[in-house]
Image (cartoon, rainbow, N blue to C red):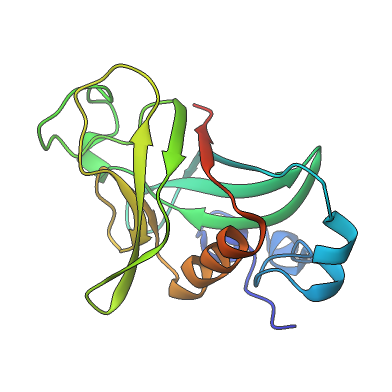
Length: 170
């Protein structure tokens, strides 16, 4: 099973020992053994902003797949541009602010040119639209996975265990 670099590996400020931290068991996508172990379990997809800043000025986010308190996968992400981090996250059009906290439904992964798009539909009142999870760098107002292999792993998880919700924590 291929392993991706841990999210800390991409950070300029990360301590050296963080790069050697083992990847969660489902980092590259679900294996048959892991799926068998999780049969009937409830999984949650959560996104959170961290206090870390990437070398390109983007604020680091983590998109994590949980089974209870166990992290099955953790992918680095960004949301919003470096200049939009303190803008109103519930207002649109096009201010490029990070995703607001709350619950979202996930649309099915679909082809988007040569890439993949996962629609995010907020389950709370706001004026944001056109939100999704996709591969991009630098970020925008969506949840952007700078590493395409992370997006492919997320897509595999969504298809195998029918993930339909995302909770943005902060």
